[in-house]
Amino acid sequence: MNVIVKNLGEGIKNIIINDAKTYNSLSFKTLNELLKVFKRIDKDKNTKVIILEGSGKGFSAGHNLKEIRGYKNRSNHLKLFNLCSKLMLQIVEGRKPVIAKVHGAAYAAGCQLAASCDLAYSTKDASFATPGVNIGLFCSTPMVAVSRKINRKIMMKMLLTGEPIKASYAKEIGLINDCFSKAKLNNEVLKMAKKIASKSNLTIKIGKQAFYKQLEMPLRDAYNFTSKMMTLNMMSYDAKEGISAFFEKRKPKWKNK
Image (cartoon, rainbow, N blue to C red; front, side):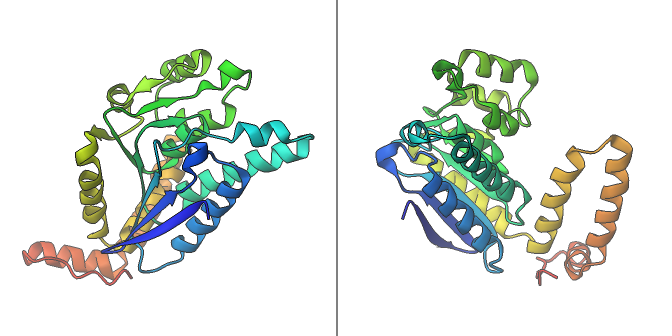
């Protein structure tokens, strides 16, 4: 198995890419396993938050170049990149918030994977890159996710030069939320996961899906759409319970309905 799932309690699942010998490369096998795991966990009512990380020395070096080199026809390449895109879409369109916990390198499709997650935290010595240009393979699919997190000029510099950026700069440009020492990263990510898990599952699901959909809409359409989503949310038990708890100065008791 190239993917391991651990239950951290309190509704938090930890997905670990477990192929350290290839720097957790996103091979066809690994991508397929990740997609199946994300789909399964997305249907699990007990899971509230997902933490994604890599084993060994780093997060992920991207696609497995040895595997790609062995492909002899166009259809094999297309299957691989389509599968990768399906995984990224599953993370974005899924109902559970996903937090990337990055150490070492997150390169090419590995950088894409971190960018696709709702939140991302890293060690201070982590690095991020879209280095495909260095081997004659422009990072076209990775740029889809990364360019939706950072501005165009910075993205183009990363794509055109292939140069890695440090965690502190990745935080500055909005690619990650924050970076910590190796000793602190796990606790900080877990703290954030627990904070999110303490909220209403239903509210988080509605909010996450609405967030990504409205980003792709013109302003007027976005307001019309989110007004409908707010109305849907307002009619839920949890919204009524949350408002009552606020006025009664007590903790809400979510029923996720």
